[in-house]
Image 1 (cartoon, rainbow, N blue to C red):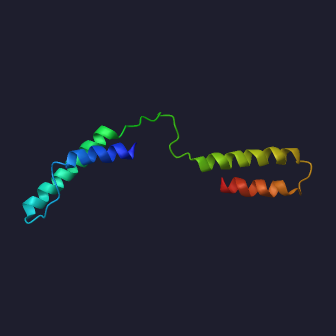
Image 2 (cartoon, rainbow, N blue to C red):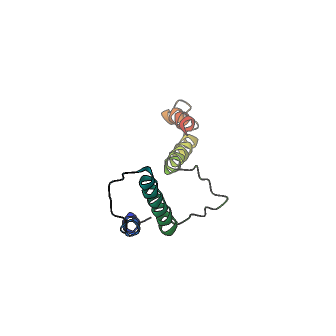
Image 3 (cartoon, rainbow, N blue to C red):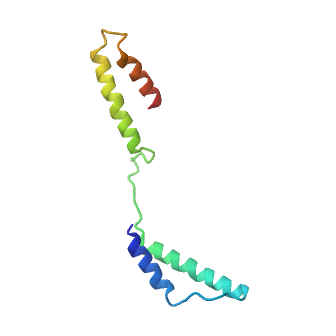
Length: 100
């Protein structure tokens, strides 16, 4: 979404209606309707619809990716140190797995 194009498109739609004092309820309702229509048509014209894959996990974030990498790294290290059960990497791995 390019916000400059969005704002320019919206300004072009609203430019025929300069700001003016609203004396009656009908004038207010008309102005509100014009603004709503302008925003709706700008969104329709400028915002692209995304088509996510049905198999994608929309809840997955970059933070989870970083945490997964850290857990995998510590898991490999803990496997290498499996003969030393008191090594600190085992406790770190446990806490990271709980956070992940």
